[in-house]
Length: 566
Image (cartoon, rainbow, N blue to C red; front, top):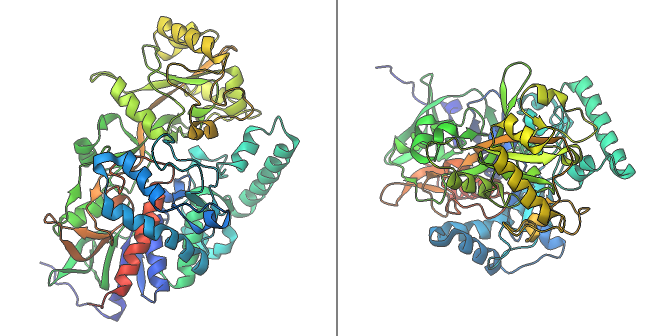
């Protein structure tokens, strides 16, 4: 047995954080500003985790950005909404802790760090018919970030996901995205896009990457800058083999190379969940063999296993074990396969989702989580869990479909690669996709008969504020509904996937990890996807992954800072 060296001064810190995504960096920055010596251990060679690939929206009801804009709702409203969505899986203690701390978290970062926010002032909650649903102001997003501010530390930042950028340029939902979608119809939009593209080209030439960061890339960039300024010690390519226990308290970690790192205040687990842990996915996810995770490759459940080894309990009693999203496989020219999350295109007017029998199965304009839930329910066991997003030529050039960009970007390469299927008639398209031709023809005839009047009597597209925001305001009378009639016709195959996992460690209102008896394990915290969903595995609004991640990272660090050092 190898004899381990005793900890020396360099091996002792106040707080160890495992993972450098939004939860981990939020905990690290908060703790450092509270005067703690903090080290972040990251498995990958770059920082940011899946958060750096995300859309960047942060669910944080009653945040100060909204209040400054005049949206000041009572705390009972978001609580009532979250309870209505979660039903009997409502976690009152953790939801109450989240609702109390989320506005404080936003204010703390605004006042003390480089993380500044813009408000989602017109973004409604997903289920507007439920009690307490908000019509805007409950989310924020990191303000655009000039990555030059990082200096040499820019090399530490994970690159944005290729599939959701334009040649590495991040585009933010809202006015920025709308400009890209309308640049062939608006001189103002064209000017905005031209400016961004020219600046991006300059940055690629000078720096080899985009520097005008938006979305999750801006969030992580700003947190990384804040961490550097606060003196956080970030160590990449670190493998942790075990948590250290002393007198019933987690007091540090053992590294895979045999070294030991001691923490006076504890350890925060923020390793990114189990998106790529095949064994755990098989236990918890439906159709796990067909599931396409959008998490970073290092999200293999390491944090969960470390905690389980010291007696931690997992929460499996969830409506869903993952934050679901429809995903298409992207065949890149080098032979690799990417994954595209269909977040926005499903809600645009002139596209429908169909099964292999050619029939629609859901309201495509509802949330991405709802789309996959409906798909899994509609496809019998034994059949492939897949659907097709079907549109016409007008739609494709106006909005794009999946990774296929709108005009004037060429799209022929995606047809040749097999990603985008095309047919001169609905029958031709069906045969190209393996869809029942008669079924697709009948579905399109039924859709078009009603879409001419802007109606969808089958599923009610465009009947809520959430859906209408995803649509096109220039399409009247219904921003989510338009006929599919202009040949040729196109389709992209989409399959079940997820942004992150919901099943995770049981934690309390202070982000402390609980054991099988419901008792807190001293010195051990969890946030982000390592902690079980506070919303019971439901998806009440956009930003419900990052909102709790940042907030409970903040809560964990604040609690650790209030404790006497071990």
